[in-house]
Structures are given as C-alpha cells and as structure tokens.
Figure 1 (spheres, helix red, strand yellow):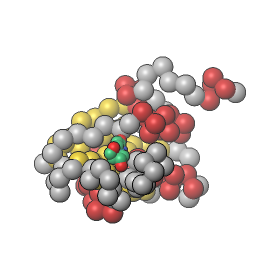
Figure 2 (cartoon, helix red, strand yellow):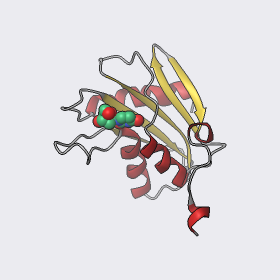
Figure 3 (spheres, rainbow, N blue to C red):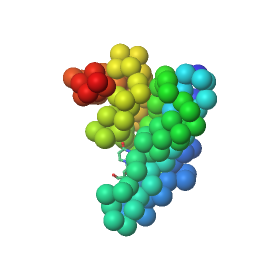
Figure 4 (tube, rainbow, N blue to C red):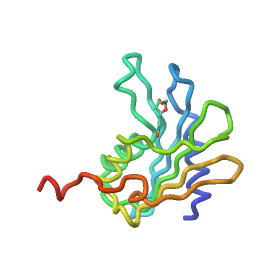
Amino acid sequence: MQPIELIRLAEAARDTAYAPYSGFRVGAALLAASGLVYTGCNIENAAYSPTNCAERTAFFKAVSAGERKFVAIAIAGGRDKEVTEPCPPCGVCRQVMAEFCDSENFMIYVSRGQGQHDTYTLGRLLPESFGKSNVI
Ligand code: THU
C-alpha cells in the first residue's frame, strides 16, 4: 500500500472524530503486517484526561483484533474541514507505537493536506525509548 492511500484513509477517518471540546479532528490509518488497515479517530471526554487520540484508537482496535505486527501509520488532523497543517503524534501515542513497532522500520506519515505529507521512522520521533528490554 502506498503512503498516499494510507493518508487518504486517515483523512477519511476524521469524519467520525468525537471532538466537541477542542474541535480538533484527527484520523489515523494503521497498516498491520497482515495487510489489514485499522482506522481510528480521537474520542474526547468531558473530564478531558480520558480523551483517546486517533492513533491509539487505531492501535487498540488492531491489537484487540489480534494484530501484533505493524508496518506504518498515517495521521491527519486539524481544526478545518480539510487538513492544512501537519499533526505529529503526541508523546503518549509514540510510546504506544514503541510497544509494538520496530523503531527503524515502522513508518509514520503525517499529512500536510493537498496530497503532501512528512515521513518519519518511529526511531526519529522517539529516540532512546523505554521499552520491553528495560523491564524484562
Ligand atoms: N490528538 C490526536 O488524536 N492525536 C494526536 O497525535 C494529537 C492530539 C487529539 C486529542 C484531542 O482530542 C485533540 O486532538 C486536541 O488535542
């Protein structure tokens, strides 16, 4: 699957965002090694801190479906109907990615809108991360 296809799915996933407090709608599309794509949106809460980001929604859907290996994620976010600026993943979502994804190979595509995107490895966005090897 090409990055642009994954980005289009992330942009479409913004449609179901539940963001009545921030008005900031985020969509994510996560490509598993199985070839299946799991989408997610942000889900806000009146108590604020229970809010779940789009990326984590996608990961939790995938992991709960039995997936454990992942190839790439596309992220699209913003206040407007169309994406106009990049929405890089928050620190908590980067840590969730690190639990399941290889830092050198897992790719993160951040939409800039109008068919443009930025490309990162997980290792670039979360260097020197805390993980399984620190605990086990
Ligand atoms: N948000 C995401 O869904 N993903 C990110 O990577 C950054 C932030 C959401 C959380 C909240 O609902 C809204 O965007 C504003 O922070």
